[in-house]
Length: 115
Image 1 (cartoon, rainbow, N blue to C red):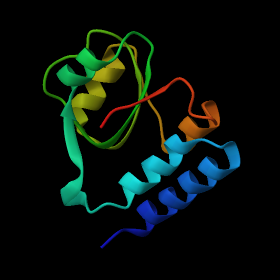
Image 2 (tube, rainbow, N blue to C red):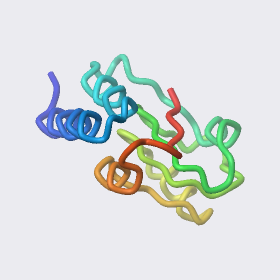
Image 3 (cartoon, rainbow, N blue to C red):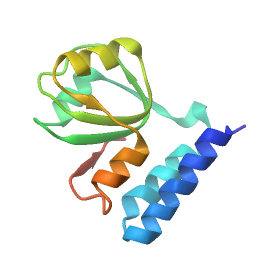
Image 4 (tube, rainbow, N blue to C red):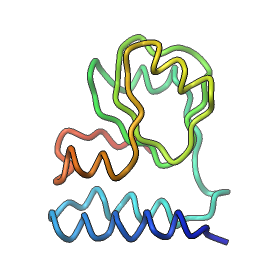
């Protein structure tokens, strides 16, 4: 069963997609509505391999704290472990919500979608 918070987030993402002609937000809404069993996990080590300094990253799953990230990033994810959040913030990075992400990047340009 999908929670009301997730349904509301998916609605906001779909609206942002149609308003800004940005397919990335529709794709995220699609991922949000998938069952939690179908969502993926990723660790900080892997994010560090796939990104570069000052990237804005969105991951439609859970971010785990295994490994370290060698540079600072701005991250939006559906879920994040406490250790991963601490490591990102310690490294000078930021954690943002989906609404902040849409506000800063309405068309989705400059956002790296992992997953």
